[in-house]
Picture 1 (tube, rainbow, N blue to C red):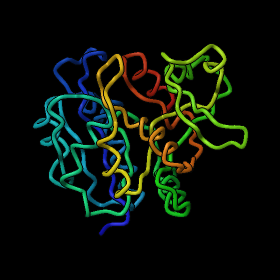
Picture 2 (picture 1 turned 90 degrees about the horizontal axis):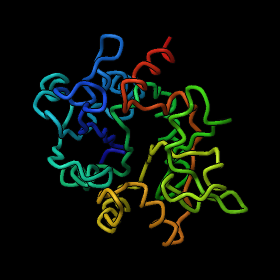
Picture 3 (picture 1 turned 135 degrees about the vertical axis):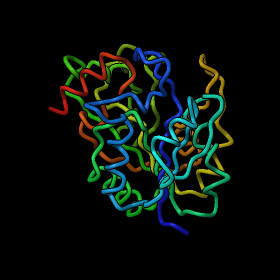
Picture 4 (picture 1 turned 120 degrees about the vertical axis):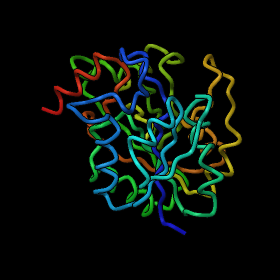
Length: 249
């Protein structure tokens, strides 16, 4: 079994970015498809020589563009991040000891951070390790983080859950530690608990973040890894794409 396999979520469309004909991860950033930056960082990390890419919108175009050096699984309906990872279960179950989940639309994540996430997870022995981002405020280029879930901690500093923005009280919205949704899981625990996620939310989607609540209910502690805010900046709109271009300079 592999020590760690990487799953890259890349099924979304580019509609909000003025490119309805392209899947989001193929929209160009400085002349290269968005996902290519993450794939280069994964390769440089040396963790997984053949990551699994979850494709959806224009799946054949994504596969044709990226080539045969990756394994692909299809998420025909985009029903959330938990659903996307579940699509990879049949390919990866009993093939890896741990699963690291990354996103094709976050091009600034670097290989050292990927290595750090994996390293902390392996050293911790926890079922779940998550990256977190601490921002001084939500102004300027950091405004996009205001929509991220807030990291809830108890008095001893242990993670007790994620409070999504739409569910957060004003004092919770003031929390400056947010969740960019980078996770590393013990594979056996992941596959066993992924099916417990429910879609009883406004979007009717299955969220990977619900696994934090499940882990806590089981009495499991969660390891965390700090991530630089710029590395966690995602691309969901044309404005965010332009912002990433500026941050890269």
